[in-house]
Length: 460
Image (cartoon, rainbow, N blue to C red; front, side, top):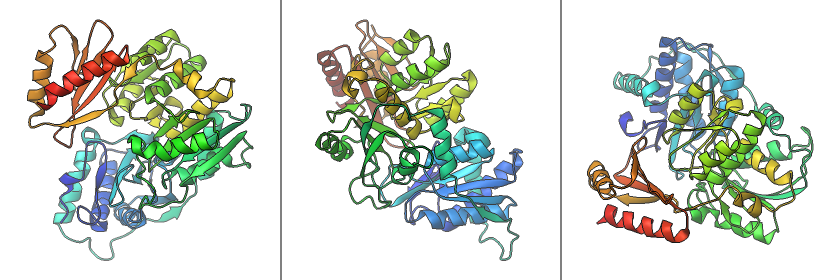
């Protein structure tokens, strides 16, 4: 019997199939999800279910649907979808949903991202722990009785509606012609990009799309669909230069994150994209709040203020970001991991909409992307560096004590800020014995010096 405590994480379900979980566990999770929806009075009589390109997705999704239907709710099967397509469906139809994906994890993994109606997130403190416990009890009780009544199921294709909605939010029809290399990593970007950016039935866009790895293949034969790892950007970087492209876009496996490469093949930091999109959204909604996490560049709150907005810091993680956005009615939110959240998208994250904002900003003026992005990249960052430690709390306390002169913030791990503008954040992983370090400095020399000094203390 599956031990669901091993696969139910802080924000979602994630584990290897079939050794950590299988279709029987998926059916129990579907039933438990529906029980929680019913117990909390969740509106609507249906549940949306979608899956990505992983080979185990259809079977797990079908089993989950059986659990939902046995508890009395209709199932609307969306079939293949990106995670932000599922969020679109949840928001547009006002229904709860479940997306079967393991995002950027290797091929043997699969998982579930669940949400309430309006794409409201479900995490450990908002129903996921209850779902886990109910599902574990169902598994312990044995198989569901044969002939259990089943609510109906129906099938819907929402890809055209999703694409049309995004096109309404960002108009790309009048920008200058751009050549765009897109690396889908054999993930769901290969399914959504041709419709969102290339469907002439919606309206022909002045974009020449150069596709890389658009074939849907959950074994990831070319590289992992994880653009956060620099080695997975190499093919895109080479292709941008080889094709003389204006920009490169890389999506992760479920296409809810988007990474950007400039015309030289150089990565544009997610902090710069956060600041760029924030400036565009604030131009439409002056004075609005914009959310960022403690690991984004200090240029982000600076630029938000310069454009008349109010920056608010939230902890890393989509449930924290979405909750803070809803509380403050924020127009936009960005994370260092390239998750981008929009009020116009039910406070949910969508890499595609962030990509469209970047294309619009580039296409509305004549500068190359490297010059455009330089306005938003004011400081030098290390990127995230992981270190294995025996005692996370003790090591954090040791590092804090070493810098009594620094201004400390413990909203999310430990953030120390220095008078010269340098800072670092050291935070524990929720699932592994790791500390994650991010450092930023006013110069590369200062960043490297601080980075090496902190790593020496963490690792000794």
